[in-house]
Length: 276
Image 1 (tube, rainbow, N blue to C red):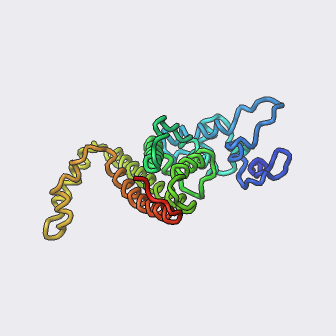
Image 2 (spheres, rainbow, N blue to C red):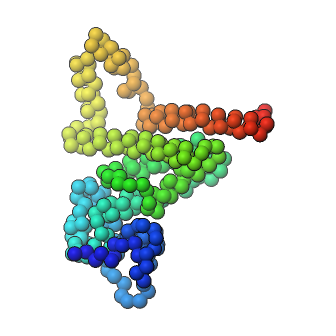
Image 3 (tube, rainbow, N blue to C red):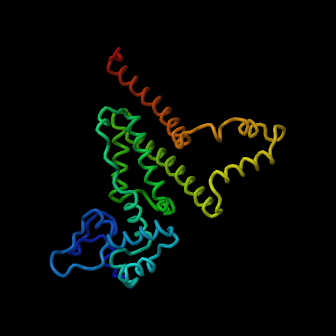
């Protein structure tokens, strides 16, 4: 059996830490430092997570199991349970390692408004998920509690600091845009997987799709689809991020209306007029 004491949220002296987190996540937060005495262990939590991430990146999440990770590290499966008590716990640590910390903002960000800051936040998240699509295959089992995930939440909320939105509206905005990011990245990953399995180039896949649509539809049965096919919707945009930017901009357009309304209400309440 696994060493149950390693998995509980307790201090080294056996007293509860009060975080409610498993021991492995407390270590990720730096709350469980290794004692200074004794030989340094050859197996560490970071080595376990790194091995699991390498497996996921190379072979997909289906390849990640406690037994396979142990094999890659040359240790017994049971030895992993002294650091990670369950595969779901390992998944959280893998996801946190995969997303990493938010990238530093450029110097010009000091002059940005909330819309530019939120846009940067969304595109940065999307870039991480597109580069590490295995993260998208990890089921979401709860709210974010790991260091890097909370750093991303902090960045998103901070971008909305001067909007006048209530705190509940800010987190709802972050959840809404985060859902767009994840959905768009998941769709791209699914399409990539399907193309790889087919062994056909992306251009040929699209050509075949359009050919099928033209054969199976017509102005009498599918007038809206026919108008779509007669347009340049599939070939007219040279911007690779068009669909994502279009969706994000529509969300931000709506949010801008709410922010402007709050600003106007605030000016009315204080008797101030907008600057000329």
